[in-house]
Amino acid sequence: MSLKVVPIRHTKKDLQEYVKFGIDLYKGNPCFVPPLIFDDVDTLTPSKNPAFDFCEAQSFMAYRDGKPVGRITAIVNGLLNEKTGRKEARFGFVDFIDDPEVADLLFATAEQWARDKGMTEMIGPMGFSDMDHEGMLIEGFDEMGTMATIYNYPYYQAHVERLGYVKDTDWVEYRIKVPDKVPDKMARIAEIVLKKYNLRIVKYTSAKKIKAEYGEALFELINETYAGLYGYSALTKRQIEYYIDIYLGLLRLDYVCLVVDADDKLIGVGIAIPSLSQALRKSGGKLFPFGWYHLLKALKRPNPVVDLMLIAVSPEYQSKGVNSLFFYDLIGVFNRNGAKVAETNLELEGNQSVQSQWEYFERRQHRRRRAFRKKL
Image (cartoon, rainbow, N blue to C red; front, side, top):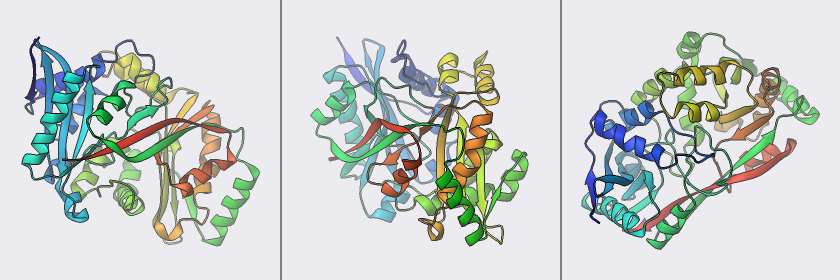
């Protein structure tokens, strides 16, 4: 049988085929949560995604006798490499059937593209920035995925390790029981922190107003908070404008908690969202004809699962109990909306300051993801 890998053109038609392959491969899998097709297509389109201002990327598809059997995107983030001094390429959006010939040719093609760009290392799975999915699932294959994370088959790890990739870092995730009320100790800490540092919790009911007053500050705070984390690529002004337009209008604003100081400067943000996992599964990654209905229903009606998307606190206020303010505000919101469990986003396995915040809750660590590295 004939196997070949070809570069994908940046056309809507070709990129839709590329994205749909990553959905079709998991047909019937009860834990896979598909992305929105248009969102991934836009991410991979240079004219749409401002990350292409400083990134180069090439997507490849593997075909056997004309049928798609694998995909991979190779990325060079020039801005990050300039900052770190490394010659590092990334692989992402990777999916393939359980076949060593397919995996070998896919990765060999992506690696050669990276060498041709002068790169000496390959890491992944990673995207253009932290706003994209990252980390290969290596534990928790029987757990429902989330909209913010990758789901992949267990055989992926064996193939990438066979090809010479080794662990670079791991992330863990937790499933947390939402308590009936704010734990007493956490409530006391929150009240002390508010008074001691003269802080305020700010809530919004208007997406237009939150965009105007704190949209840019929110993403600048994320840059400041995450600057030292693994593989973090600081968002540029154009990226910030792009994500403000895309995401802030979609949030349920009662699930957003902003913390400001006496001068109304943003010093902390916590963002959650009612889980869209089941809605995305019903939509199959499509908004039309009925995907939008499932997503709107998941956002607006009582939802037993909430996704904790991100927490960011200004470095000068870290380790001062500010994190307690987000739960002080949001636990009541979760209960009023029928949330019983919360899913955390990715946390670096060694980040004890983040994981310690869960000590007040009944929880279990249920998924683990890995970034791999290989010398080229």
